[in-house]
Length: 319
Image (cartoon, rainbow, N blue to C red; front, side):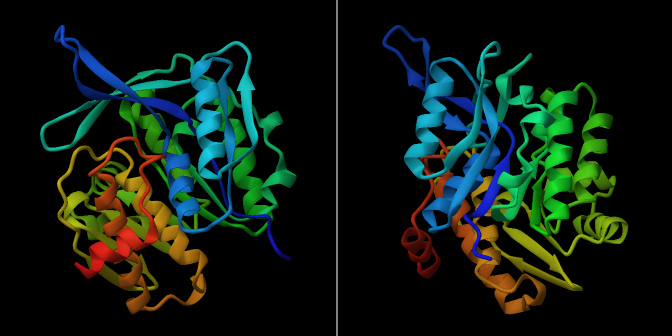
């Protein structure tokens, strides 16, 4: 049966305020960039010609209106983007360090994205996609956690491919123990796991990445694990294979959205190939493209609107 969507993602949708110089008076200027990991992933997939939709919640305010318009503008279906009448849209202020790395200050106590309830998750809507993608920011608080669990169970029951990017943000959790517990819940459902170097160390307690991945594979039998290592590139672990590709050097402005771009690029490749029978060569090809796409995004601000075209990625790969 032909599906209406290639990917439906669930989770946070927010405004990233990124530093944008100083005013004449010496005050910091911030740019309001639409963001949130799941929609960053979808925005990349849309650039690659895939059909996508988002399940989540924004506030009844100017930022919620901006986010809805942005998603529609880049081609993400918003039929299941709900509006909370009482709680404002989540905001994040991003402080960028000289090397492009960053730290976050969140205004989310509460934020509209965490007000989604299980009753608002439409299981029939989820049946319209080939792949369901989620992260842990929709598992930080009880109500939205139940909504995420309902969506996951529905996706599993309907035989969808499930991808998971934990996207650990310690300031948003009441405790790191709870964060780890919810990450482990997600591991139990996913077919594709995208995880960063610091996250694998956090969840496995092992310094060596290969040991950490082996721990996850043995405990959860995740078919494909994608490990991102920042500028050092990435690895794929699949059916006993371990494939690594180097990163690309670009003039980094900030790293917001790089991991999401990598994730979206990888999912795009998987949707175009036989997930059950990926070869070592294909895994390498997937990582190279994803690394290149992620590198390009680090040279721009505002992830959702900064996603590269396919030809840009191919040009970087060809040098």
